[in-house]
Image 1 (cartoon, rainbow over the protein chains, first blue to last red):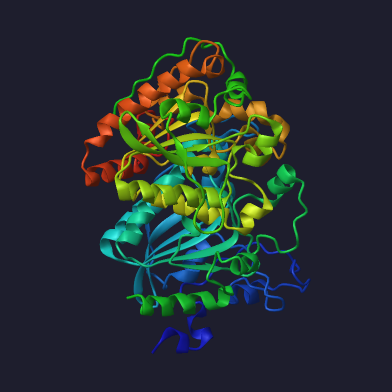
Image 2 (cartoon, one colour):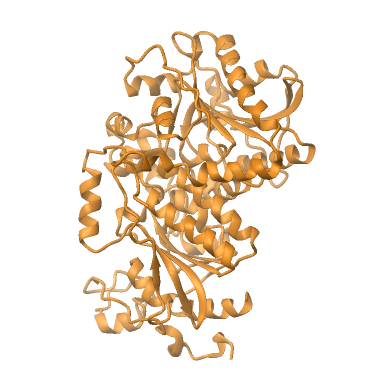
Length: 277
Length: 285
């Protein structure tokens, strides 16, 4: 039976149970009081107004991967303070604090199954220095893509990133080329690549792998663009219209294939994996 | 990979002074070099989709006896020209033009020379509306498939993704007083401090000078500029750039295509490999 024919509830959290995330007492979209358990079952999408709360990599893995199927790869690759960055905060301390908090860099990658089909999954984590593309993130992405290219296993990306990481300087910029080199091999090998763009996806991440999916799927209301609105206003003194750089804006400007609620994502991906065997 | 780093004669410049030299309004721009390298240069226009981006010049010229495709960011000299050239900040049409000309080069087996001199891609609403992120992303990916030798040189400012979109090459070299950075010092200050007045502090931390990049293994060579920087003698600066570009190009012209593309892949895939050499440098793999 096709995945799309199955009832939504059956596939919604077919993966693991989503972890608890800190939520405001009221939804910023509509003001309704939020109940953690209800939100957790509803993939952290407000059932009143459809506001999508940001998820970390751990939540995305739980949402996408079939329960018990996740095998994390290269989780021990670590950042170092290569530029000896001191102000306003020493980079090494920032990274060590985040690692202590249980976050493992801005990108986590590994293999899992989705509705029984094997995939490579990479998820950005915006909580780790703004989900910025770093040497570690680039290395994990590139290795996963190379392995997906050689094994023919479809690649699924969840992006949430501010761009390249300033504190790693020009080597962070070079990750765009490194990742896109590997992505070119994935495309050349004819392996499906599904890119899910979540709030926010900007800068070097948008200008490298995030918008180059065979199918680009954006979450409703997600901000997606190259230059952030603050910098655009600073540079051009332009008044940006409401909804500028939203997922819906990118849909109407031809950059994404669809805007899809998170509650339907798993079902769609499962169906796509059937269609791109 | 060979590295021909030469000690610049003046090591007393502060980082900010180097940035000011890199951005100096009298510094030679791409066309100043291209016209000296290939006096018969013919400019070609347009992305064949919707427009022509004057911030990037492209065309063909005879260089050391061989038809070569030249690409380069072009800043303007007068205020009027600066506006017309958008200060060398490309729109999506520019990256699409570059890739169009790269395919042109591939068809006729012309080598490609790319000169980089941009503060960054244009940070404006129009560029966003026409898909600047995807245009850069596609360019970066496509450069890895162009089956002819490519040598790039940073001649002034190498700003962020806007520069890298023109900087995927078999060899990348830098003029001595040029910079190459993940973001302009102003943008980095704005991102890290939320205050772009902290640009000098940001610049000092970013390690964006030619010597820094050579040490990190991101560029193959630093080309010495005439005393007082390239702006004091365009001919001497162009001759030095010509010699270095040609030396790199000659060694690439004899390489079989599959080897060339494999080396280009590895050049960027392992561009941070020097980080293993020093304990404080990058990931432990």
